Length: 487
Image (cartoon, rainbow, N blue to C red; front, side, top):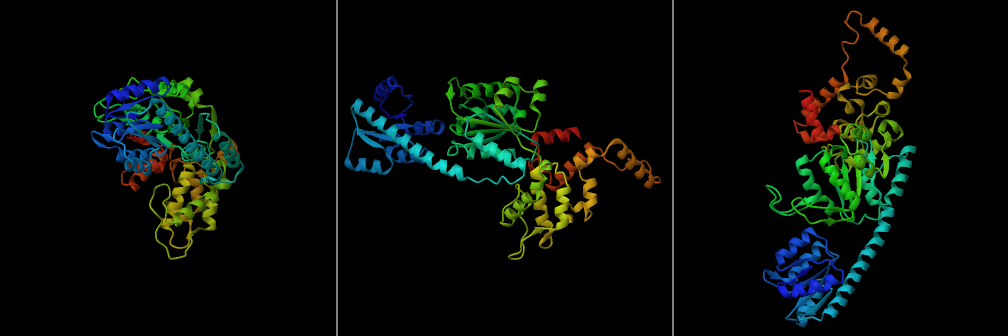
């Protein structure tokens, strides 16, 4: 950036440096300069020490605070030793008086950029050590989890797009963060976006940004998330919810790194790694015409399947202990209420029968549901032990009732029951209930169970739809769909 109120000087410098291959933006006032700095990452600034609307030395400090690696060369026609010393103390790379020798300016600028490169590389070396030691709470020592963590570490070292597939609540966002933290990009921004939580009319502006006046209400320039993720990672959760018209623009961005803000014709380029996640079957969505085939193949450079909790039951108690530990340190579990106050030194644990019940349960809500169960248990437990009634108060102490009445019975047990055994079981039930009407009269359909569960959750959170959706493990948009479906 050339920030100087002398238009002729800016023009001369821009032409000279432009011929050397520099990409130049110009500003005449402090306000214009800060506006540019808010929407563009610069390597260097040529800054006049006296501006019509501000002091260059104060502006220097504001610029360095916003972009610490920025190299600033001060320019002035009124150079003094005192102002030069003050500028260097404030973080300027060098100080030149006007009219400056253009060859000298070029050499100074080149050295400043070399200095910036060294700073970035040194930061990178420190980050390599940090990445190797970075710990994320990915809990689980089952064979599936060990294999998944090893694969994640390998993929993190590349820039290949990654698609995370798995049911709601399995921890897809945690693995997205791992792909960033364990990558060479870890010192840069990690920007998440839930594609199912943003209205489709606002999605393009959210993703690519907009210019002032691009539409009604656009009162200022807005940076899009792709710009914020430059040199870092952009995580797009629930990618299956993205509108088709925006899928085209995302595809182009992934292929070229180029995009346009809404209301702007200028092409911009950034380098962001794309990680996506979905609980949908994207090949089926492609077949149904709801998802672009070309984008699907672009997203699936690598695919990581996050297993549901029922497929790694050996991790259940380890996860439960982790949630209890974090809860007892005063944190909240999955955004809920903190655990209630207990006597000093008292450690709350799971009773043996509660552990058995957890191992027998299928967890349709996966790890997220387990976290909420531990939060509920810590709140309701009356002593140092969490019992079954604290986890599922609606089922009392009966472990058998939990196994048979909670949603989604154990699939392994169900698979072992052939048609003959099911028929025998139903005949036995009928014999016991011959005076109580039809044997199936007391059973609920899956739709009725889902409806009742949603209603109970909405009641628990006093109708707060955002919190209800988080507890249910679905997007707010999906919650509205369910409410409409069940009237």
